[in-house]
Amino acid sequence: MGQHLPGVRCSRAVMDGELTIREGAREWQSPLMDLSLSGVRVRLPRAFDLRREATAELEIHGPRGEHVLAWAKLARLCDDTAAFRFDRLSAPSEARLRDLIKRGRLYDHFD
Image (cartoon, rainbow, N blue to C red):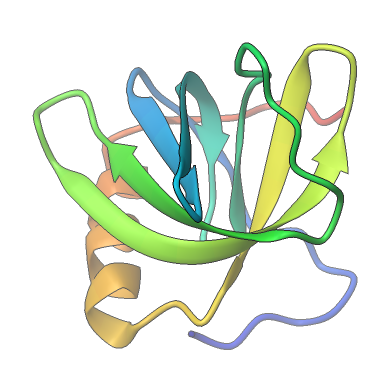
């Protein structure tokens, strides 16, 4: 993955889209909330039961039919959101992710 400084948060983009989360034979789908080169945040899927730091395969579906495949770890779980941190992002996936982020709207506040 591209250079990322510890403690420095990547810019996040808000966009319409869906995320498919796969872990083993289990699968969940959820609307995208925001996306960056370091990770993605989504609405908490129904019956979601991954533990923190679990690794899952993510399939990001953009608003125009684009898709990016990536491995990620569950970084944070809240009452209504889940945040994943990308792990092992390939160069082609990173390039597609950069293009997708450019089409989003810059996220102007952080929680």
